[in-house]
Length: 335
Image (cartoon, rainbow, N blue to C red; front, side, top):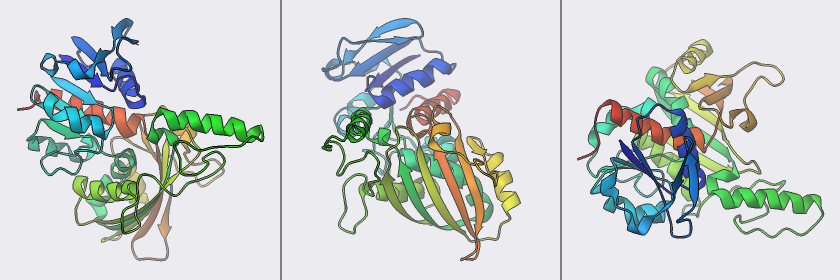
């Protein structure tokens, strides 16, 4: 099988390559594609150097699956063109809410892969992926009524440039030098910023609305969800404080059992110093980690969780590759 990665030189593109190297997918030919700025660069994959090809001139009829990992504008311009010749798995937000494009987390809603109409499958927002993986087994058992989520998101969610800026700002602050922000609305080093993406008229940011709308599309459109998304001076991994109100009664024992037995989840919940997961432990791991499981005593059938996951791996590249695996398993490569 032939595969292309569009945006192969970026954070998610490179992480996709890492995931593919560890997976047992049978790849005959791999095409690494990017903008003209990166054309000609060499990237190693399984001991072989691959030259980066120019997106503008790439022939997508050469591949069966193309991973798009280059942002919404690139997907807007090239994904439909590519989808005339192959199946596109798109990491950007551009097609996520298109009713004709399935939004997939394989552990949660792989049945929706039957509804491919445009030869495009959307990969959800990184914060949404880890959230719905934790919510799915609980919703199946206890029926989620309402969710209040606060996210604590690493700078890598914005790409490589914000990561470089965090490191540079940190050095400047420690040297007592003036900091000027380029990729953030305020200084990110030694600070938190309650603002990710652009504001809408109702005061919510686009990132917060993504979480609401995507969770409804993937899990259940009857669920009410409100979110506050915050950027932290952390390089990799997103964290979430989640408050859930169920329709049905639950027990903490059944909650832990359901989460422990669900594919992709790992419970680390000891009520002692260090008995929980943090972004550092989640980096490079495939699991979604769940900690601080406890009853919300202020509301009937209320529960609190702490969820942590590697946003570049589980929240992007790994989910995209697992979508491809599900397609290959069913021998489906588009219409």
